[in-house]
Amino acid sequence: MATQLRELEVDLITRGHLERGIDALREQFAGTFSPETIERYMVESLQALPAARFKQFVPLLVHRFARERLQALAQVEGKVAKDVPEVLFVCVHNAGRSQMAAALLDYYADGRVHVRSAGSTPADEVNPDVVTAMAELGLDLSQEFPKPMTDEFVQAADVVITMGCGDACPIYPGKRYEDWELDDPAKADLDGVRSIRDDLARRVGRLVDELAPTPAS
Image (cartoon, rainbow, N blue to C red):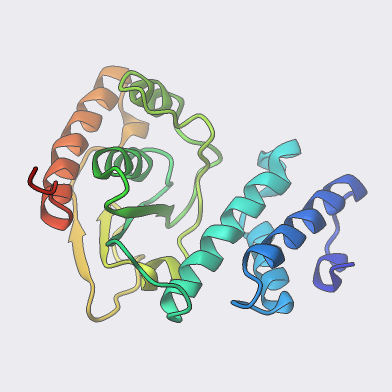
């Protein structure tokens, strides 16, 4: 049984799901990280995500978050190659702007850029109007969830783009930092969210052209 997980107060069903998640991560990262490191990241990720907000989805979201963190850590430590540029979008709640920007970049880049998003103070859930506005473009954010910004996310990124989170993002040399001034979707109606979405689409399109232009045919 996972020893670090054993110290946490979670119900038996959730504990079983979390232990299976740890086993899956140990298999995925075998030879890259020790079992103790993998378990520690799983436990820290559980503590970083407010479990009561997610109910039965706790183990799945914790597993996804821990996996993202371990992948970023492996990049930082040079244990896996970075084949494409890495972009991190950061806003306050990771519930609107950064989620939309990440989804748009992932779509436009089509595998030529890898993207993550995070928040300095994550919200409970992604803004429903944001989910609606992105669905209008055929982009599904219904399974996404706000994630806290972590040091390995920032260190793994080549480009860090902030949106309204001030000085919350740590600065590391050798990275490109930008701040995009955009309205907060939390303070807008659906039409306002659509306007923010379209502004982001233009900015993201230019970013893709800079980082990974489409190869000439």
